[in-house]
Image (tube, rainbow, N blue to C red; front, side, top):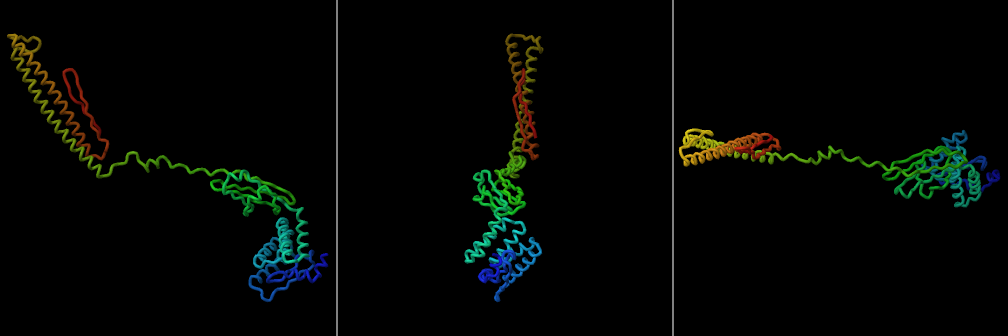
Amino acid sequence: MFSTIASSTSVLEAMKLRRHRSLGVLLAALLGAVAVCPRANATDSSAAAQALFDEAKTQMAKGRYDKACPALEESQKLDPALGTILNLADCYEKAGRTASAWSKFLEAAAKAQKNGHKDVERVAKDRAQALEKKLAKLTITVDSAEAEPGLEITRDGVGVGPAEFGLAIPVDPGAHTIAARAPGRKPWETRVDVAAASSSSTLVPLLEREPEAAPAPAAAATQAQPAQPSPPPAEASKSSSSRKTMGLVAGGVGIAALAAGGIFAALAKSKDKAGDELCHAGGSDNTCASPDEKQEYEDTVADAKRNRTFAIVGFSVGGAALAAGAILFFGASSSSSQTAVNVAPAAGPGEAGLVAWGRF
């Protein structure tokens, strides 16, 4: 049959299907000869395609399919033609890339059918059918794909659509890389080795979530929002001036209280002297000339005692006020905002007063 096809004029015409260069009849065993009839008006791209095509045929004759197949691929990109597709399919098959060869033979058969080249169509279909039993197949199963919006699956860098999930897809024998990614998920990748004329499968698991961003350190948050911000310079100055004024006022009160304490002390001493004169002696051995003198003596002693109490209060309040005034006045000169004065009453048997304390 092959020799008959090679000698047929109609088949030779069918092989001259290159748009800018004639078809070099592929497969010496298939068609028995190669015919090349370049066109006179070839463009630069078609000339490059022809050179690549010729180089590929040379490399195929030497068994260098790793060089021939890429040259044919580039030639087809520059100037698509049925003859190049057929030669590329043959190159793939001899290189062991059965799935690629199978798909190219089917592509050539469809193109030949469209152009009405029945003989070429039949030969391409026969070659594709012969490869079917040699095909390696890979099944990609996705675990809960619906739970991962935006999920993308690739096989050797080429996207795999949802329609292919769970189907045994023909692939070239060898290693294949399956990868998956989705928004907010960790990327996943695996490698699958598929032997010739065998079937393999791989499961894409539910992708792990990306870790959430760590919260800002507590120290940084404290610095960003301090609990007690320092007052502006103007406010600090105003507060210092107020404390100095309060210190001066407290000091004046202290001096006045001390003066009053001194007066009451002098009165108490005077009353004590008067009492001694009334009854000629002090202490428990007082003897008074008459009941009236005794009553006057007791009143004088009571007045002396009361004046001593007022004197103690005056000295106590004066001392505390002076201490508070000093704390306020001299503490205002420092920048500390923690200056504080505390005053509390103090009392005891026969005496009374105030206690003051502070910090600055």
